Amino acid sequence: MAGDDHILLIGGYGNLGRGIASLLAPRSVARITLAGRNGDRAAAAAAAINKDLPTGRVEARCLDVSDGDDLKAALKSVDLVVVAAGTIEHAGKVAAAALEAGADYFDVQLSSLQKHDVLEGLRQRIESEGRWFVSDGGSHPGLPAALVRHASTHFDSLETAQVAMLMQLDWRSLEFSPTTIEEFIAEIRDYQPLVLQHGKWQALGWRDFRRFAFAAPFGERTCTPMFLHEMAQLPSLIPDLHETGLHVAGFNWFVDYLVLPFSLAAFKIWPKSRRIKRALGALMHWGLKAFAKPPYAMIMVLEANGRRAGRPASLRLEIGHEDAYVLTAAAVTSCLLQRLDGSLSQPGLWCQATVVDTDRLLNDLRDMGASVRVVN
Image (cartoon, rainbow, N blue to C red):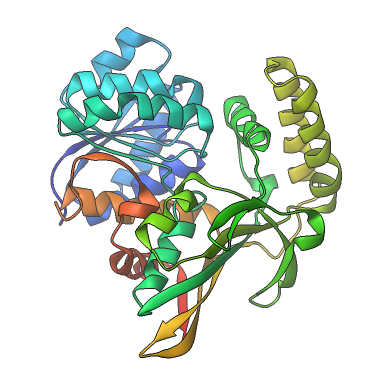
């Protein structure tokens, strides 16, 4: 069993936070506090998880992260704060409060420039105080660069590695806060269609978009390149790598061909308008729910090429789960378990994908119900 740390899980009763707590609690002896603005929902989620535990180690707390005093009080006696809520605008406040409290930090949020700028501003203090800060946890971000790192262990020289992702969710069954939807739409504002080609990051035009084969019944899909902060670190970690990128299959015709292009255009005209972000978020939310249809799954495919024993070699790695939130929660839980048992405790500011033990990650994903298939 992993260590008995006290974890404050912000957003603990949401779609993702509840999933993380449900997977982490039976695999550790950690004390977990589910926190969020709705104390009743936090208490209900904690009670449901405690039913399957020999001792009631999951607690609830009403917390408004925008209230500095409330946040400070919540962090007393906490060893690790996990942010699984759409609170990017408060990222600096939570991270700084964690440092003041002497706690480690882990976030499961979109890979935004705003968040990374804030955390980079704290890097020197994080390192000097010996704290463990991990950002971009989850599956997207969180898994693509980890899969490339894992592939590198199968080659003497890894030269190309492309990751394709399909995320087809039953959006109708999910509940999202307005903040979460706004954060989701804000990712579009930072969208960059970059891939590494010939050792340089380059933007692809739509004519250059690639098709990838996903497991049945999904089949081949045209995928859009999407740059992630974690992918930028791969060339320095894998020196022979000269081509890599993340490629994402679309949501549905309405979102792909109407909402997303309109959002990109709107953000160019009104880049900082909160009203525009809210309106686009509402439109995105409606489009995802209105046009959702089965089958549902989240699948990632890695196609890698390089050299092994002096000869050309290739590898295809496929991971997936019928529930994207379970796959995301499982990836987070694996990283947290490595932190709790001390195997992943080096201080500093990291991305989950570039610091996690990838062998253990894939084994943990299997243990938590994901499919993992390696084809040499």
